[in-house]
Image (cartoon, rainbow, N blue to C red; front, side, top):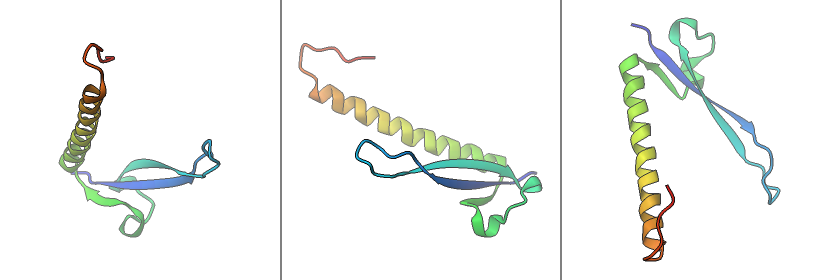
Length: 87
């Protein structure tokens, strides 16, 4: 079974309105069989099989859903009684 390595690439982002420079992060998933990098030293996660990738995706999606739900609940608490929430 193929295993996969996950890399996180960082690059300077364009400055924001305050002139502060941030970083943009991009993740790459590379199959072990075609990975010419040094996964032992450079990969964020190394040696994941397909089931591990699916579990990682599900865990990330759950955290995103929790964050979105919390934001909606906060918006509902702040909204005035006669106001409807935007979809």
